[in-house]
Length: 423
Image (cartoon, rainbow, N blue to C red):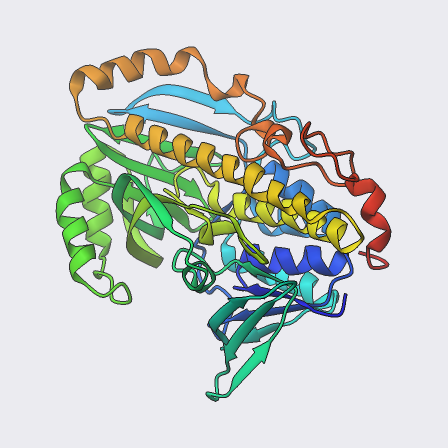
């Protein structure tokens, strides 16, 4: 494997790609414009399927030890509990969701990646991509301004919503759906409605407050206020994305009071406003270039699916790259877009519908939601095989036969001989 694989973006998706590539025996270069790992909590939720993936890397136990186990969720409408479900029915050795700051997740992934011989090249930016017959020509700009041209066999774009890989490849980013403005923060709060080891979602006349405990001190709050959407969108459109509106503790306190959540906001570790729309790349593959994670799909943070989906995107992709490197037909790589593209579509539908239901402001529709939502609680669903994890949509379980009927290539088990020792 003379030509390395270039991974652009060293967040959780990119570092997972590098780990999978090194485990499969590839040479890897991973670059990132930033000069540091994540400093804040950002993406928080790690789900059962991702923990199973981390188990393959030998880092699941440490990840669980550094996080906080969440055993279920409660949904309140106008102060009344209408739905409560637990995660103990998840068909996994990890029947729970894990709350852990992205900064900790990245530290764990980075340590594993470096132990396998890959190290992020920081303050390095991708500036050009040209498709060639059996590789890609890529131009990199380093921190000192010097330029470098390389010819990786494949490029995996894990560089987020404003992906340079996607833009340089000319891949459209399409969608719209529910465009909502959020307040997000890690706050110190007190009061009778502070959650323990479960997520809580409070809604009232189109407003929403999501809470989950990060630690004994800090609680993650996500706020959507129905009547602020037009103004917040205008603010977002009129200002530089690098200079978001400053939030105050009073913004959160006013929000929780409007929704009827009985907590007092005392302090913050981090808070930010943001605006998001449901968007998906038209293609996940273009020749030797692939997109994964937020580079291929973005959506509301409510539900905790984004980081998990990106991590599972690259697990689906890299074993196919290993198969092709060892003689399987190149057409196998087309199944990455077929399978993970469908997962992305299902994820966007799920988050859009869920947010629409949660932020209903019509009293009649609110009443119907509150009446019928408890009739089929999520505990009746096998969450491990939900839209982001299902084998039916292409995320084959590690070291098992591929269960996708249209996938006629060798199974992952037959390809495992290329793994590096001890990985």
